[in-house]
Length: 333
Image (cartoon, rainbow, N blue to C red):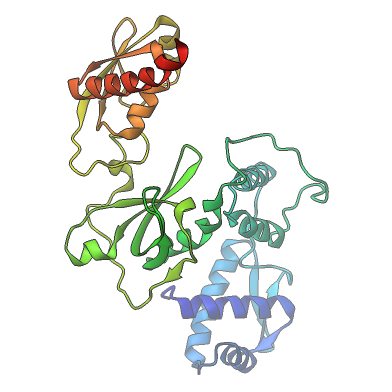
């Protein structure tokens, strides 16, 4: 039998009926019709019964028919019961505790509901549990309140609109966006998507929006057809960059950095990028598209790093350091 939505709905109703008491075929048909609000043929319910009987037998139970009445044996059998071993229960608890640390993302509430329904609660949950994994999160991050709505829009492939104020703007602008991805970087969340005005111009460019810069409610634009560009791939899109910025005409280059002996030990155990390769001694190479985040990362190492390649990146870092030094020169005299 095809596993369509109508069948799944009928199966849930019939499963609950078989658990309570024995029903005749006519009673089953009547109850299903009342719950779904549609007419159901006798043949359809008979086919459903055969399918449920087979599934019940696979789980060690019977769907009996005595005197024309159908019921489970054992009576409390549940076709939808999920049997989870104690080790899996602990993993679910761990996943829930991790999700709780993401402000604004209320998926952990859904997990808790499932956890309760499956009667998998272990020990007392009345007392506040001490966290045993802690992430570097910002509980006061303003953009977190939009996470759930944007995630739902991405999953539902729904175009959204909102007022957005970039750091360089004096006031917000109204945007319509085709949402593709939520990405976290440096304790900030970003929506990656395609602006509707660029799609209309057939300029298929992906933009990133810091959630803390959103200045209004997220509004679903159901009258606008969702457009998923075939070239969007979350894995490959950010494969060759550090951070979140995607330079419009950026090209992958070989970036070579030489670290101080002390810093090299840190970089060896904590690579700056998955492409990190040891060249010689304390010198490492990377295949990257240079962007602002890469510059910031290099600057964070201070005097412990030197850019050897490419020349454009070397000159950019030198210029920034020069400007920073000049700010201090007059004060230090």
